[in-house]
Structures are given as structure tokens and as C-alpha cells.
Length: 194
Image (cartoon, rainbow, N blue to C red; front, side):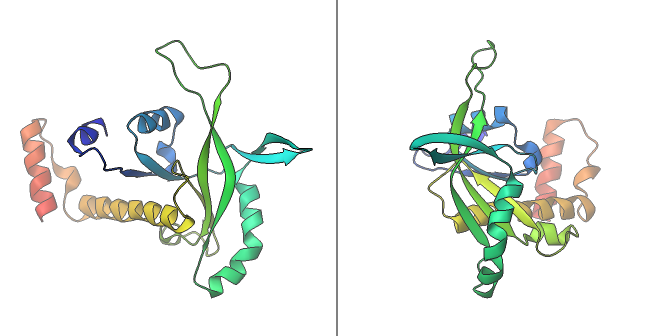
């Protein structure tokens, strides 16, 4: 990502779409430093925070994706008739522990706002054999994205996954046994041309 950032003209802002297993807080901090947007699917145990007003004071309460699924579920039956299958939630935050020059974590973690979108029946879930009506919570650091933009950015990741699966199975992506970097680049160039 750092090498890619050096090659880009200044006003371009990219979106990193990643699998939930890659979403760790240290990667989040690095992506933020590079000024890239990101989108990922939240794990079931991803701890989020919701800003609420209690007796006139703003507070943050812990919330899991399951609670957002329950809120979205009654509305999804109506929405499916209109071909829309996503719902955005406002005032959702994620806790980030920023690392400071090898001196450990801050004592008080920082809560960063995220776009949280519940969606149903993602292509990847259906292809992996999950039943229809499966919900997913997508998160993005760009709070300016609409719910549809978050889902579209995340869906782009699936076409890359399918491409690599096909490249491994059909085109021999795993069949290069050379340790020479030039040979590996030549193998990948021929493979991707094919």
C-alpha cells in the first residue's frame, strides 16, 4: 500500500476492500496514515460503540453486530420488494488503540466514527453455501459513503477473490517454483495475460 501511494497523483483517494480476517487495528492505523478509505465485513464478535443521549449527556454504549441485525431485520422484508437490501446506521464508532513509537498503547483508546451498513444476501455468502437471508455488517472509515457505496466497494473484493481462485485452479498461479524474482514476475505476467 505504501508503494502504491507513492505512485498515485495527490488528489486520488483509494478504497481498500478487505476480508474481515485482515481487519486488525494496526492495519487500520496504517491505512489511515496513508489516507486511504477502507471497507470490510465485521466479524460476529467485533465490538462497536453507539453514541446515545442519556439524560441530556452523550454516552457510548457497547454494541455487537447481532444487535444491528435485529434492528434491520423487520425492515428488510419491505425493502426486498423495492430491490434495496442495505441499511445504514449512524453514530457507530470503533475503538482504536494507537501505537506510539514502541512505547505501547495509549491508556485511553480513541473512538473513531465508521459507516456501518447491514446488508443481506451478499454474493460471496450465497456462493459459500450460506442460506438466503444471511446478514452481514459492513464497516468503512469514510462516513461520507452512502450505504449503497459501502456495499458496492465491498462487492468489488469478491470479484478479486474469484479471480485468484480461478487463477490458482485453472491457470497455475501456484505452479511457479522459482525463487528468482524476475522469473516470478515473468510467470505472473504470462499468467495474467492468459
